[in-house]
Length: 124
Image 1 (spheres, rainbow, N blue to C red):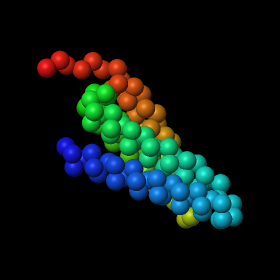
Image 2 (cartoon, rainbow, N blue to C red):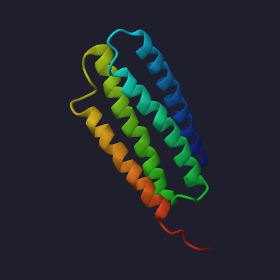
Image 3 (cartoon, rainbow, N blue to C red):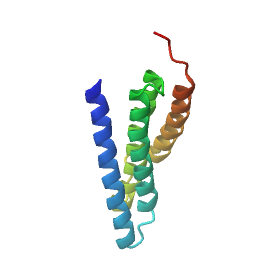
Protein backbone atom coordinates (compact mmCIF):
# COMPACT_ATOMS: atom_id res chain seq x y z
CA UNK A 1 0.00 0.00 0.00
CA UNK A 2 2.91 2.35 0.62
CA UNK A 3 3.77 2.18 -3.09
CA UNK A 4 0.32 3.50 -4.03
CA UNK A 5 0.62 6.31 -1.49
CA UNK A 6 4.07 7.24 -2.81
CA UNK A 7 2.70 7.24 -6.35
CA UNK A 8 -0.12 9.57 -5.29
CA UNK A 9 2.38 11.96 -3.68
CA UNK A 10 4.49 11.87 -6.87
CA UNK A 11 1.39 12.72 -8.90
CA UNK A 12 0.71 15.62 -6.53
CA UNK A 13 4.23 16.88 -7.19
CA UNK A 14 3.73 16.62 -10.95
CA UNK A 15 0.38 18.41 -10.71
CA UNK A 16 1.97 21.18 -8.67
CA UNK A 17 4.75 21.62 -11.22
CA UNK A 18 2.26 21.58 -14.11
CA UNK A 19 0.11 24.14 -12.29
CA UNK A 20 3.02 26.53 -11.93
CA UNK A 21 4.02 26.00 -15.57
CA UNK A 22 0.47 26.74 -16.75
CA UNK A 23 0.33 29.84 -14.55
CA UNK A 24 3.53 31.06 -16.17
CA UNK A 25 2.17 30.28 -19.63
CA UNK A 26 -1.06 32.10 -18.80
CA UNK A 27 1.01 35.19 -17.99
CA UNK A 28 2.84 35.09 -21.32
CA UNK A 29 0.55 33.48 -23.90
CA UNK A 30 -1.94 35.86 -25.52
CA UNK A 31 -5.61 35.01 -24.95
CA UNK A 32 -4.79 32.24 -22.46
CA UNK A 33 -8.08 32.47 -20.59
CA UNK A 34 -8.38 28.71 -20.07
CA UNK A 35 -4.92 28.26 -18.59
CA UNK A 36 -5.65 30.15 -15.37
CA UNK A 37 -8.49 27.83 -14.29
CA UNK A 38 -6.48 24.78 -15.37
CA UNK A 39 -3.50 26.02 -13.33
CA UNK A 40 -5.68 26.67 -10.29
CA UNK A 41 -7.23 23.20 -10.40
CA UNK A 42 -3.81 21.58 -10.66
CA UNK A 43 -2.33 23.61 -7.81
CA UNK A 44 -5.30 23.28 -5.46
CA UNK A 45 -5.69 19.56 -6.04
CA UNK A 46 -1.96 18.85 -5.80
CA UNK A 47 -2.29 20.05 -2.20
CA UNK A 48 -5.56 18.14 -1.75
CA UNK A 49 -3.99 14.89 -3.00
CA UNK A 50 -1.03 15.24 -0.62
CA UNK A 51 -3.32 16.08 2.30
CA UNK A 52 -5.76 13.25 1.57
CA UNK A 53 -2.89 10.75 1.36
CA UNK A 54 -1.59 11.89 4.74
CA UNK A 55 -5.05 11.90 6.34
CA UNK A 56 -5.73 8.40 5.04
CA UNK A 57 -2.31 7.04 5.94
CA UNK A 58 -2.59 8.42 9.49
CA UNK A 59 -6.04 6.92 9.95
CA UNK A 60 -7.77 10.28 10.34
CA UNK A 61 -9.81 9.56 7.20
CA UNK A 62 -11.24 6.07 6.78
CA UNK A 63 -8.96 4.14 4.43
CA UNK A 64 -11.28 2.98 1.60
CA UNK A 65 -13.30 6.16 1.04
CA UNK A 66 -10.18 8.24 1.74
CA UNK A 67 -8.25 6.49 -1.01
CA UNK A 68 -11.24 6.62 -3.34
CA UNK A 69 -11.48 10.39 -2.78
CA UNK A 70 -7.75 10.75 -3.42
CA UNK A 71 -7.92 8.86 -6.70
CA UNK A 72 -10.99 10.92 -7.58
CA UNK A 73 -8.88 14.05 -7.10
CA UNK A 74 -6.27 12.59 -9.46
CA UNK A 75 -8.69 11.63 -12.23
CA UNK A 76 -11.03 14.60 -11.87
CA UNK A 77 -8.15 17.07 -11.98
CA UNK A 78 -6.62 15.34 -15.00
CA UNK A 79 -9.91 15.56 -16.87
CA UNK A 80 -10.71 19.14 -15.90
CA UNK A 81 -7.26 20.67 -16.35
CA UNK A 82 -6.40 18.43 -19.29
CA UNK A 83 -9.54 19.38 -21.19
CA UNK A 84 -8.97 23.11 -20.66
CA UNK A 85 -5.29 22.88 -21.58
CA UNK A 86 -5.97 20.83 -24.71
CA UNK A 87 -8.70 23.23 -25.75
CA UNK A 88 -6.36 26.19 -25.24
CA UNK A 89 -3.48 24.77 -27.28
CA UNK A 90 -5.23 22.60 -29.89
CA UNK A 91 -8.74 24.02 -30.15
CA UNK A 92 -10.21 20.63 -29.16
CA UNK A 93 -10.87 19.17 -25.73
CA UNK A 94 -10.13 15.64 -24.58
CA UNK A 95 -13.69 14.54 -25.37
CA UNK A 96 -17.11 16.19 -25.14
CA UNK A 97 -17.98 17.14 -21.55
CA UNK A 98 -14.51 16.20 -20.21
CA UNK A 99 -14.15 19.34 -18.08
CA UNK A 100 -17.63 19.12 -16.52
CA UNK A 101 -17.11 15.40 -15.92
CA UNK A 102 -13.81 16.14 -14.19
CA UNK A 103 -15.47 18.87 -12.14
CA UNK A 104 -18.26 16.53 -11.09
CA UNK A 105 -15.72 13.89 -10.05
CA UNK A 106 -13.90 16.53 -7.99
CA UNK A 107 -17.10 17.61 -6.24
CA UNK A 108 -17.93 13.99 -5.46
CA UNK A 109 -14.40 13.37 -4.23
CA UNK A 110 -14.57 16.29 -1.80
CA UNK A 111 -17.87 14.94 -0.45
CA UNK A 112 -16.35 11.47 -0.19
CA UNK A 113 -13.40 12.86 1.75
CA UNK A 114 -15.88 14.41 4.19
CA UNK A 115 -17.53 11.00 4.60
CA UNK A 116 -14.11 9.40 5.10
CA UNK A 117 -13.35 11.83 7.91
CA UNK A 118 -16.67 11.20 9.66
CA UNK A 119 -16.68 7.41 9.18
CA UNK A 120 -16.08 5.86 12.61
CA UNK A 121 -12.90 3.88 13.05
CA UNK A 122 -13.08 0.33 14.32
CA UNK A 123 -11.53 -0.27 17.68
CA UNK A 124 -8.85 -3.01 17.74
